Length: 125
Image (cartoon, rainbow, N blue to C red; front, top):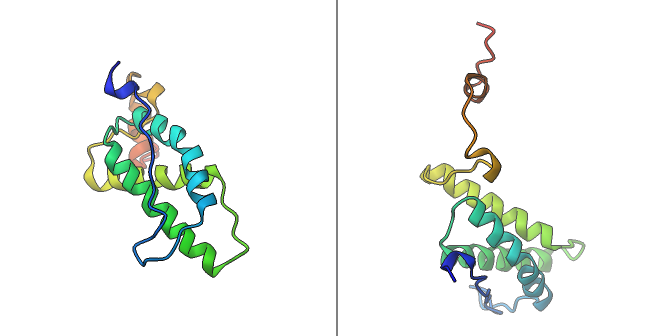
């Protein structure tokens, strides 16, 4: 079996960098979101699982601190998936070495209209 086909486990420290305990329900919710995060990262050709684990742990710990300040915040798996996607996008934008186009579009031939639209030039010059 190829490494890319293996579903890596997720472990998140139950203590954040400030020495505060992390709500176990957040860790469980992050674990439920993990397979989706892995699938998205593979679509985007991001195979550094260690980096993805760090992102998820950072997000869980930050979320735990936020919830302690605001008890009315509710978190679901979609929150963790979106947060990880946003971090992948931020990294790709900074490093410019990750293809962010959806998997289906990567093989598609680029049309001049796509280029004009991407550059903000709508042809009305």
